[in-house]
Length: 128
Image 1 (cartoon, helix red, strand yellow):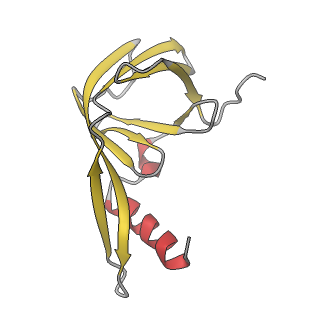
Image 2 (tube, one colour):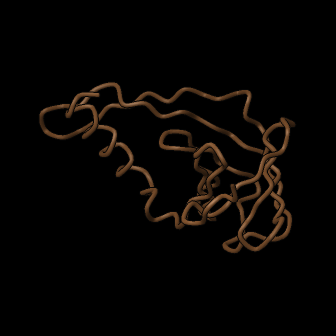
């Protein structure tokens, strides 16, 4: 990835709620990341944003379910003045989320009826 494109990705994320402001991310065993944000909904990895209805509470309860409206956000151009153009691609196959708190530091997540998977706070270690 070129330096300009990397800077563009950073600028695009800065134009959205900064991922760093969303708190500690959750990670699955393969390293995929998810942020749960009471103001927006859910972010996955670096470029997928999902508006959630209902929005998640500030503290994740034992069970939270929501309908999702998701887009992938891609940087298409970085201008010399630092402005960034993006393209949003609707993710129509990502329609719902169900999050169950399995333990204080572990969530079980189901996305649109796919098999459930576990996520832990990314700073934690997955057991071998």
